[in-house]
Length: 225
Image (cartoon, rainbow, N blue to C red; front, side, top):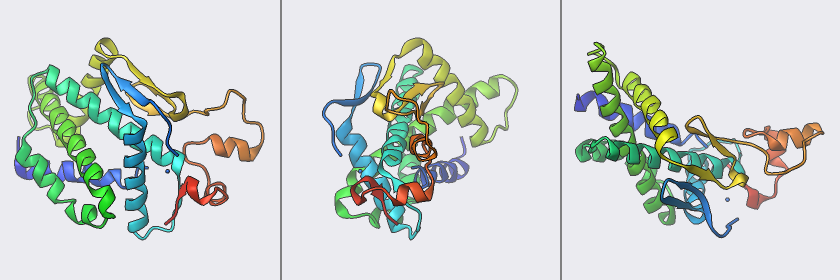
């Protein structure tokens, strides 16, 4: 694998997390196989995402629910990729992981000190998972006669294989307040048993509610730019 070509691809994937996208609850937000993702971890990562978004100078506001869903989606994806990579005997190149993190160090240092460690750990786990998927995807594509696959093609193939493997080998369970896990991704859904009728209620159920809906939330329930 080309170190020069792959590092920018992973760094770019990490940078995309800044565009993805704060109450604590006891218990697990999700379980991936035998591993648990705590609500505290989700809230900490969501808070970091809020801080990144706010520090980026954006005037957009992100509902805290959306931040938590985005954080949990990243955490589940990273966990799945790592477990799949380990099952396939793939070890991520730590030099490439370090290089990808270095490319985002300015963004990390811009965070308040209390958010840096959890955000760096989250990005490291994500980068390791992406490298594993690239390795597996490229090996598969090469075996199919596609020797010059790009990193994007390789990670897409690796993700497809990972999701098929996870469907057969892992049980992914998500606290309903965050949505549900389907087809390899966290899907947003209403946490209420009732059906939204009004336009405002429907907007509130959306994973990407309108700016007007978010602006009316209490300050504790949104990330302000």
